[in-house]
Length: 119
Image 1 (cartoon, rainbow, N blue to C red):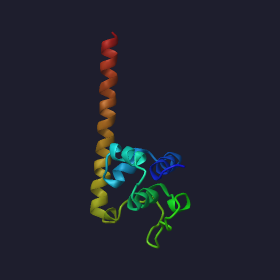
Image 2 (cartoon, one colour):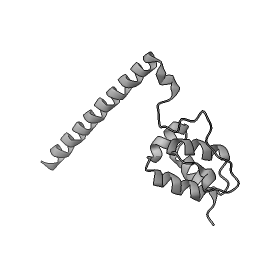
Image 3 (cartoon, helix red, strand yellow):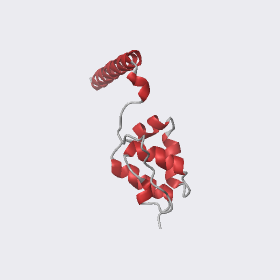
Image 4 (cartoon, rainbow, N blue to C red):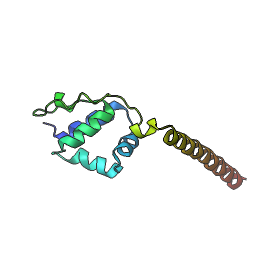
């Protein structure tokens, strides 16, 4: 019989949602998530939080749990409520745009270095 951590891992991997996105939304590390996969007694809170992100109700697969959904849970992967503020949304979008530009710059610099080494 599978323990809670194994059931959690299967559900997370089936969801197709990247582990990085899950741990980022939880404010945790990838190592923490891997530890949860190995933990036979994953807490109900952890199951609920991850279930909300991956749109999974673990009460259907783990006996003894009541439904993890709440009337306040929209079941969507929407942005946190803080981004409802236009100013916060502006700065988030500005940061994301700058981050994308920086990544493109790094990619270009890396390609140029590889080309120089190849000559």
